[in-house]
Length: 536
Image 1 (cartoon, rainbow, N blue to C red):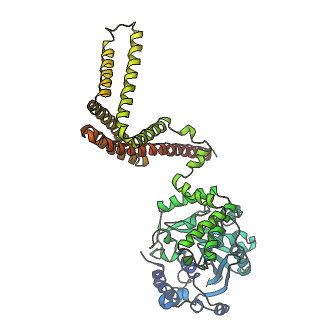
Image 2 (image 1 turned 120 degrees about the vertical axis):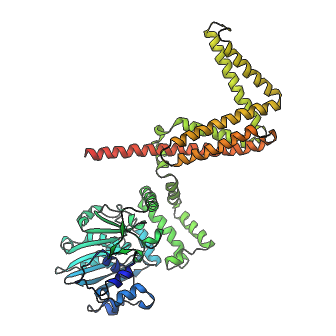
Image 3 (image 1 turned 45 degrees about the vertical axis):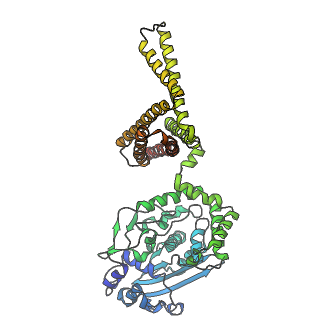
């Protein structure tokens, strides 16, 4: 796969008259917007791109290729604006490239490495930013009636392109022929009138990397969405310089990375539960730490020592944002399940047998681990005593129904006598207790293992329940065989191990009963939504 630099080198001698503007050119120009431009040179409207860039091209292959190419290096650049203010948390820059004839490309810079720029990104989640206001002002100043315009930006720049286009007049918007949002967030619904997106919906192309995080925040349902591959991995795929090209076009795929979609789902749910006011308190609390310690860049801000971490915690607590932060791990671990539990929505979806089994296993396991010395004797006596009591009641009932005909019910009487005798023997003989108890306990554990084996064999999906039953069948089978064959002096530590296993099994069964109920609720909810859509 090839890079943006390769693309620039391949088509270096072709102007936009020779080969029309395309999606890759958009990415190249938006990437260039991150470089520093000389405001003195760029004030001359006849200045070429290669004259305007301050950065030395000697140590940057991409910039060197751009500067030396006819396609990009000779482009005329104008209307360069840059605003940076710590007081208003503003990091804004925009410029206009003259492509050909009357077609112009307006590019908004995304977030740079400054702490101000990163803070402005988060401010977007609870109020309109100065950068968004300036994007409208910039377009009103630049757009003329005798020209056509392509608006674009990467990351925050993509958001500014959308916001600016949504808020200019119909007359100005009529001069816009296309808009590119290169992995930028959409408009926050609590801050902006998202219905304005309808004004530009048919003009927009959205380009995301396969591992997409930033571009999915407040995302809108645009028709033209492309997913591009990257030479980077994970969150670093956001960097547009890493996007890959094949045969002069962006190399695209059909689906996002599943890991990024999971993160997006968590982030969406978290944002739904957190008010703009809570977001504001959290952002101010976090950035106050870095600002107080003199950090000016994102790199400096994340290099916190022990004192810095302590200051961060103090600021978050004092800004009353602890509950807001706590919602993040809650969403990661449980999604919507906790909220549904609080409102009682899951109650009727919970499998009572599964929940009761989990509670029983947990209680028995705790007793085994706490009373290790007497656990084995106590459990066997209780279990066998329960069997004797049940058999006594059941046999008496049958004799009463049969008018006390002992001859006809002799088999039931024999069974009761055998069980009662066995119970009496183990009460007075420790050796008998261990022999009978290890057999009963081992058989019980093997039955549990076999049930778990059948459960995972019949499972069609390798989910949490599948792997739980796989592990459970192996561990309980091992414990069952061991207690049947092991000598009596191993009973104490065996009870400790088995007790720990049962506690873990019981707690996991309780948790899974809620997870299963949550999935049932979600399936029913989505089915209802599908039916409503179908009716409409």
